[in-house]
Image (cartoon, rainbow, N blue to C red; front, side, top):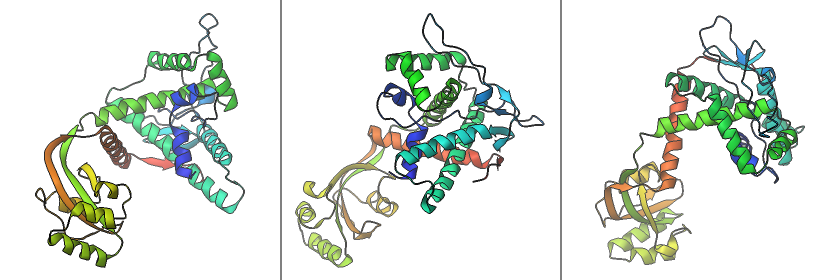
Length: 335
């Protein structure tokens, strides 16, 4: 398992992780930094999980209540528009991510392990910076996570897990305080809300073409096949005989309906210009040499859920990177 996947698993899925806590699960994020109330203060402030006021579980309801985060002056790992990210949050999250990597077989003392750790620290700090960026932008839009919202989500998680003891066991197993867990959960809820806000305007339908293709690895063979097609050769039969695309060759090269930006740009530039039944010349792509035929076209066809979700993720990341460019980000922690 590569480092990026470990970090991805590490940064998402608090709900799934808790409900599956009796199984082997990746650790949740330690507390994520929350921004100070104002970014115009003369001295930056940071939210520290260690400074949050502890609130004991309610004995009658046998339920947990998230402690309210508190702003404290602390050593900082980074600042975003003057909002500090506490070093203790950064250090604890790095430690948990490192533990996850070690569990996957990484030797942290080897040269490659040290390089992986350096990259991991960079990714962890980037995630904490993203949390602050999202929080600042959410505040501009009036999007907030109330204590009631946070505790309602926590209560639902405990109910889904079946017992408050599972949360206690999870916190103990992963060396997390309740404040750590709740800070991560608050950031997760806010991230979900901002994701929905940013991507709500994306269309659910788009221009699409139904295409089939033949993929081969040499230009000479591709040209030979194209010549056969010009002489009336059967596209499906030639795809079954020659195509190296195992996913489509059995279907005569049919890859179904596709919107723009799913296939390679050089392919899009051709197939969306072709009339129905027309075939392309040989197109050179990263995968090899391809010939396409357009079978159907629609100006506005409903997008499949997986395409919509992919477009939302791309749109959100593009928004996030663009917003980051407008902010003053200072990295203070050493890699």
